[in-house]
Image: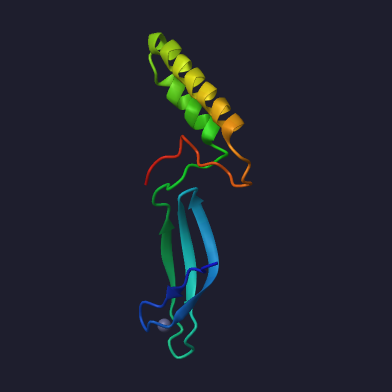
Length: 112
Ligand SMILES: [Zn+2]
């Protein structure tokens, strides 16, 4: 696992995180102290969320619900029929697939 390192902007020594103030789900203030005793600089860095590479499994249902809500009512049946076709294809594929123990790649994963 890679640990994020913060460097003192004054002397370039490694700084220690003393406190994190989570202002929002996507924004945190990170209070830092330089580890160089001759410097002693204390400062605040901002940490912000950038973008999603692969969507959360927890919010997956929410995404689908939002997607369905954004589709015109007359187009929904068309979408449901398309999903049924995909589901039928998947169940056929599962019968033919040999179990590998590896999770199959998600059809719905966004490219990034
Ligand atoms: Zn420093």
